[in-house]
Amino acid sequence: MPHNFLALADHTPQQLRTYLDLARQLKLHPAGFRDACRGRTLAMIFQKPSLRTRVSFQAGIYQLGGQGQYLGPKDIQLHRGESIADTARVLSRYVDGIMARVFSHQDVVDLGAYADVPVINGLSDLLHPCQVLADLQTIEEKLGTLAGRKWTYVGDGNNMAHSILCGGALAGMTVAIAHPRGYAPDPDLVTRARDIAARTGGAIMITEDPAEGVADADVVYTDVWASMGQETEHAERLKRFKGFRVDGKLMAQARPTAIFMHCLPAHRGEECAAEVIDGPQSVVFDQAENRLHAQKSVMVKLMGDRW
Ligand code: CP
Ligand code: NVA
Image (cartoon, rainbow, N blue to C red; front, side, top):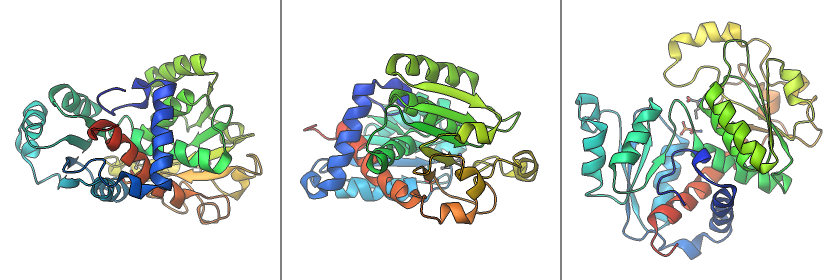
């Protein structure tokens, strides 16, 4: 297993399977893992806001016998010019793991390079691997299998799109991304996902047509149109993303058994219609719950001693 959890693409299909199987056990038998990270501390660096990531990591490490320490944007010296390298080296003298939510992906890469303890990516501008690990757990729970399923993401070619591309490919799924013109996913990540898919039996499709994207989909997924840090682009994006809202009409083009997913937070009436996110096909709160179990799996593997 890699020492850090920075990107799903750093893992083999077998390592992904290990995390998913352990996440399932953690959900079924939480009491069996009460001491798995006994006495361990997780430092949680947040350069951006969070509900799910912050609370699920803090509750998760506590449930494993350890403790989390929240380090918000103004709490540590990063915003006053202390380097990532020094922050990583100092934290490594105190704690057993570092989870970080950052703007620049390079910051989590540098944390990983300079820390002596495992580093977990809690979202960067490029990737959101913890979310997609929980999403894969959720899809497997709901549909029974991952390989061969079609996972369609409709919206911005952002951190969620990138992690879905790599995570879905690693699981042998067909991943379709339907994005407005000018908001395509990063071409290097698309190439990386295609390389992974070629080895796992998965496939990658990139389109500017939402209806083509969702045709025969088993999973329809969306995310906000303006991510954290893009607030000034919100009005422009509302115009450019017209036609990319997941509503009942678009969902009807997927398989009748399709599930609807969203990493949350959601904006009803923008990227998704209330009828969909609050409707019978939506699994968004199971998905949010699985953040807890999936991340406990990562912490047990990287910070626990018996695993
Ligand atoms: N989905 C997700 O990461 O939510 P938060 O931004 O609330 O952590
Ligand atoms: N793309 C979103 C995901 C939030 C969980 C953002 O980066 O703000």
